[in-house]
Image (cartoon, rainbow, N blue to C red; front, side, top):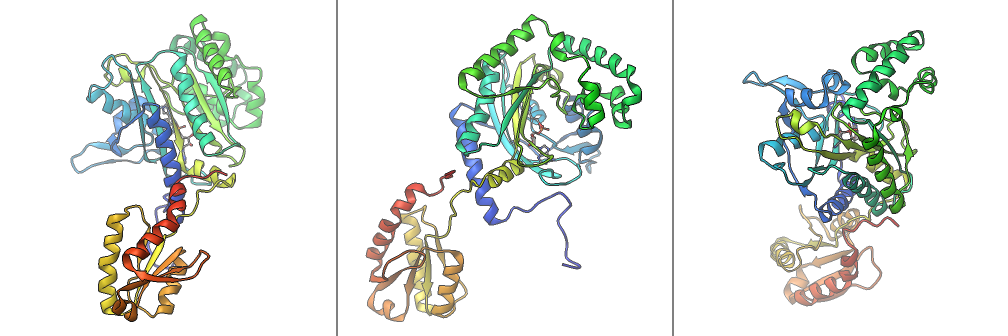
Length: 435
Ligand code: HAM
């Protein structure tokens, strides 16, 4: 609308119809993680800018060009979180959560990156993340992956596949990095401007290039796996054994690198072929050095985060929708006295059945116009209180979306009938039905 104030580019409104889909997915994700021992942690949106510079890395796109950073009124440089891992580690250190013991955490909420918006890529987006601290081995890496697999299964998703790689231990990666730089230097003429810049700042990211010329060049490049020592090789093999046992398919992708510097060892991505270019729905890996780098004691760690917007798009693309949640009943009252009575009765009904979805007509209107509103809201039943019902001490129960005749009885009896009719619906209400 001309002159109206628009939302900030890349920041989306999630309207009620859409929000029910989000709620259904969030509830399932919370259940999958809670039941596996991942306790929720709620973290601030603003952090000191140095937290992200030190964890994600100053040479990364995120820190170099995508953060919403500003000086606050006290002169501190703050940034809106571009991801959740850094804040989670900061909080864990300051509250002593990592002192030698194991801990599993989950979190969710909005993240902010000043990227070029397109389908599946926004400047405010939402993640659900899981992190496990204090556990070294392939067992926890397999758990991390199976939690994702379990979640996709619960949502009925088919078009999602796993890619895994290992970045090795820091010493191994350092040697590989030198070999890669040497190889790419020999082929400078085939690198574009972006790759040449990355060769100086973050050469491993060149492995991620989408440019067909560079992809071709990379087929002959040194492979990180050739630089692994026994321990890295063994841990990766143990992870693969576990995934095989669970029947979780995966592709080994030696070119999978991540846009954040804190990873060591395992990295993985769940991608889909249904969303075009923004195909990573969930990604993560091991980051054993981060807790110590941020001032905590040496603590192994592994985790992932999924992008809610992309997951919702995928759920829609696969035609998996949660059932609608229309009102169970719409209370119609005709005239002031009836409105007073309906107000009191509707509260009594809600006290007795707190999960009942009951909408009460507001703003008066004729029987016809109130019934129209009830229809528009998608209500299954109308409760009708007119002057004659008021005098007789009764209420009418009228099926709207449902089959059946309208009945009239005293309020208690009508309430019982309504609840009995809805009961079957209660058993399935608020459940995500992937079928
Ligand atoms: P990330 O790959 O940067 O990793 O983001 C995780 C997920 O967030 C992506 O797979 C994607 O689904 C979603 N995402 C990222 N950027 C956008 C965007 N601009 N718009 C929409 N969705 C987006 C991390 O953030 C790590 N903290 C993950 C992690 C946790 N690693 C270890 N623990």
